Length: 151
Image (cartoon, rainbow, N blue to C red; front, side):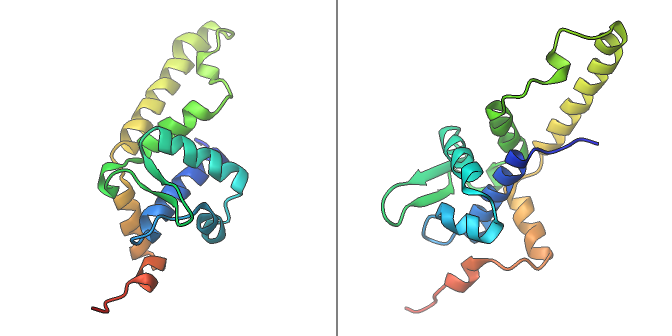
C-alpha cells in the first residue's frame, strides 16, 4: 500500500551498510556501491544530505568516507525518512489545494493520520535494530573480516 521511493530505500540501505560494515576506518561510498549495488548518482547526493542533517559524519582525505554521527541505537528510520522526504521534489497530494469535499474532509485527514502513525512507528526503529535483524538473517559483515586481535 505505502510505497518507498528508490532514494529512501537507498538511503536506509547506505546508513545500515555503514553501521553494519564500519570498522575503525570510515566507509567509502565505493564500498557501499559495491556491496549494495546502489547507483553512485543516488548515493553521493543522499550521503551528503545525511551529513548535513547530522545522521552521518563525513571524513575527508585519502582514507576518508562516512561514519555514523551518533551511536546506531540513537539513529532512527524516521530520522532518515524525514531527511530524504525533504530532498524529494514531488508534492504530496494531501497538501494540494485541488480536490473534492470528500477528499479534503475525509480521505486526506485519514491519510494524514496513517502517515503520522507510520512515522511514529519508524521513529521507534533504530539502525541498531536493523543491524540485529541483519545478524539474525545471517548477513555477513565485512567488519568481522577486518578485526585483528594481534597485540
